[in-house]
Length: 350
Image (cartoon, rainbow, N blue to C red; front, side):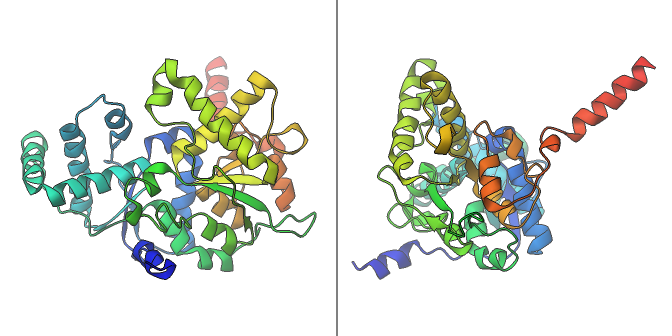
């Protein structure tokens, strides 16, 4: 089969509007500014109808993949998500998390081949919640949406992926989540063979996508590799292997589309530095890791602290300087909640 025919199989048709957004439990905890940035881009810049449902819950993916809850329980929770989407009047499901993306597709694939399972889950959902649902017409990961509108974002770019000190494109290595590209390769843009969802953004926004030997290697999370304490050495060893592989190419930053991958590539760099005094970036620093939402936000000129870059353990300020982005370092940890809390305490003291 020719490359063009292969690519045609993986080139997804992305709806232009009316999205039902499914938040990520990991993304909200570790990089909470990313999802807000995504919604701001979709609603304010692109003028799209995307519904952020307060009734939505975790997909239970971590518990399912860690053998804590059974398959039927997970499917019933997912069926409830479909019912919320149906209730809200949407048909295009956009999960923020790649684990959710893989899970939703796994459920639909199971029901396609085993319709009796779908019937059973519908009965379980009705008995437990009195809810019914229609299945999504389309499921696309949130990174697919940004990729789909990458050229429009480029037209509004204030900070292209250019090193303002040298005039050269920034060197970017990408990491695509396994649950996006490897479980059901035909569901993601480019699949496991031609993954372009992140490198396509990088190229459109002026950067240089850099290949490296362990580009498709696991980030090290792997659920049970980390959740079981005795396995964490295996987790960090996987991340270390990736860092060793990319370091010779001197990337300016890493971009990931999986919430867990971004978190581990960020946290494990700090951990390895503390353990071994070994750093993979320039001048004894780590390699900044961005979510694709944060990368898009910087390109569009969003304030670095408003999108949450202060939540990273691997310092992103060297990247901001390369991009020529002005920022107020004194406001890095000046959170509104802290200000409100201090005002309340002062009133109580008085």
